Image (cartoon, rainbow over all chains, first blue to last red; front, side):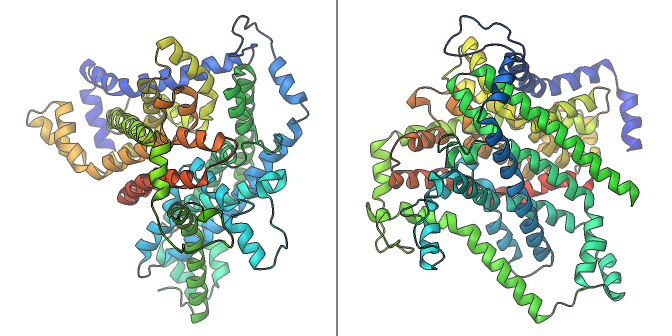
Length: 303
Length: 278
């Protein structure tokens, strides 16, 4: 590190400055032009009456778009759907992903092959997952109903995607399937950083398995766990593809989360309201992240 | 071994991991099997978990009834070009961020990381307008530009991680021998970190290949559709033709799975490097 610093200081000339700028330029130009500029345009649209189908007047309307959203009869459902979607997905994903990572930590024959097979959902897009699961949840010819009927758990086929609550449940099941891999990968990598001799000495001292898990392993990888859960929560909140592909927000707009509602609103051309929804998502993300990090940091200081 | 696992816990582990393997593989198995059944067979009960007869009729019909080969070529073109440009732009940026210390560095890193947090589709509407102004709406170049921008931040972070493992002495030696900085980058560093670059390229390719919402927003004509947009139009109708759709889904998934299998080790390495060291 110090070597680098010394060398850089010595050679940090105008020429180097130009080189730095030149090397960074393509990346910065692209990200600015096609991420930050549209983001900026979008933020001011949220305060305008902006509709693609009527471009004549786009006057400033202050918070009218936000009022329209918050006062719509649909809004409470959208909010509760979003909460159910995020927490109903993240908690099982975390628990299953952790369990798989723990079981994969010890080497066994074919572990590499097993990992490759189990991690493959990663390569598939959320939208395709939705299509595949939509077929499996098909009321007449779907696998889920077939298995439930055969096992005698239900006597009539369930019209999964035709009813709001089961539509949401089906989407969450698909999402759990999809997301466990991510947790397994991240947690497994963290577990491999836990020194073996630490566990060995604890084992010699007579610590049981659950004791080792809660007193040694979890505290050791705590930071990774906190960060992974946070990143994943943000990601799931920002992930409309699956519900969009499975239910399209239906039936009767009853399975929308904030982000699927935003996509559908954008596709209708109602950019003002869609941008306002986007800013609401952003606000929720910031507040959630702040509270989450604050609560978890607080506990660490007390301990 | 520090844990003396008894027979019971070993059996439990094998059962658990086995069940999870079946759960993971089944949806893929099911869509492939569905696509290979004879026409009509998927709409019969009881469900055939192993088809009585295999056929490729669904695939033949897919290509005959829709412009699937056009969608396939569009996706291939857009993803390849976007991934190439994104990977190289990111390589340059990652090189500077890994090797130099300058005042705006923190700001650049932050600007890249923030893009990973914000919902990408806030920009859907504005991008549609921008592309209209630029005359690039309903144009593959427009879609490629946006995909490059989306891929760059994460690629930069990933490549920077790989670059940190390449000793600086390598390029210093090359530069003493008369190489320019850019020459040193391409002649010395690129060969050494080839696996990382390939993994980044594949990651970008797969992400562009899979992208749905920008594609359906920016591309209007049928002949310009990419695969996800085409699949979206297949499921948007009143009655879904599951026979063609299952074949289309398989053809969309399989290339990305092969690519991921090739690069998964490096991608996992790139993804987890930051979190473990942190």
